[in-house]
Length: 315
Image (cartoon, rainbow, N blue to C red):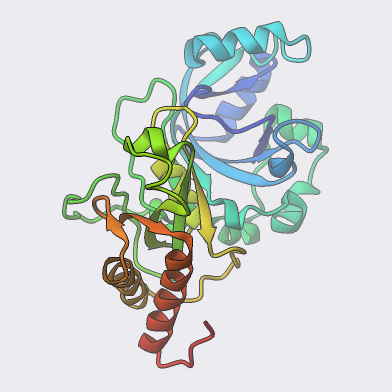
C-alpha cells in the first residue's frame, strides 16, 4: 500500500521513488506484477477522494526515469509545481490499473486500520508498506473496474466486479451487441436512470418548443451506477454534454436486488413504460421523454423488480 496525490493512471503510468535506494528496497521486497493499493493523501488531491482507497496498480520491475512513464502535459504540470518539481524520479512502470467504484470508497483508517497504523504516513508514501494479512480480504471484496494506463498497449476489461474476481483467470464472453456496452459479472444490482445535461436543441437539432419539459435518459442496471455513468461519459468527447445519475436519488452502499435476473425485469419494465407511454426511443437504452414519464418509469421498474423478488412494492 502507498499514497498518491491523486489517481490518474491514464496519464501517470508509474510509481515513483525519491531515491534509488528506496526503489531498490521496494524491488527486494516484491515480485514483478505486485499489486499496490493506492489511497489519496489527506492533504492533497480531490476533496472527495482524500484519505480514501481509490484504486489498485499492477506494478512491474521495469525501472526508468519517471518522465518515461508520464504523459507530457502531466509531466509539465508536475515540474511547474514547486511541491513536486524534481521529486519521485526513480520509477517503476505500471502495467494495469483498477479504480474502486465511488460507492465503495472508504477511508484508509476504517478500511485498513492495522496497515495504516503500521508506519508514519510519510513513510507509507515514500516506500510503501505491506498490507496486513487479515486486511487483504477487505481489499479483495471491493468492487472495481479496469482503467487505461499511460503507454498501455493491451486492451482493458471494463467489467464491474469484485477485485477478487479480477485476479482470477477470466472466462470467454460473448461480444457486445449494443452501443457503449460494458459488462459486469452477475451479482447484486441497482436499477438506474441517467440523464444527459446540456443543450438538447443543438444535440437533437430540434426546436425549443418540441423539447419543452423533455430530457434524454438512459435506463439500465449495474453494481455501480456512478461507474456506469463514468464509462458512458468516456465514450463522449469532452464538452458541454454530461451524464448524471437521476435515479436512485441516493445510492445505498448495498444494491437492493440480488442478481441480474431481478434487475433485468426492472429494466425491461422501464423500457416498456417509456415506449408505451410516449417516450421516443433513441437507440438501445436511450430515450427522449417528459419528466413526468421518467418519474413513472422509475417506479414501474422498481415495482417489477420487487415483484420478481415476490416482495411488496415500496414505490
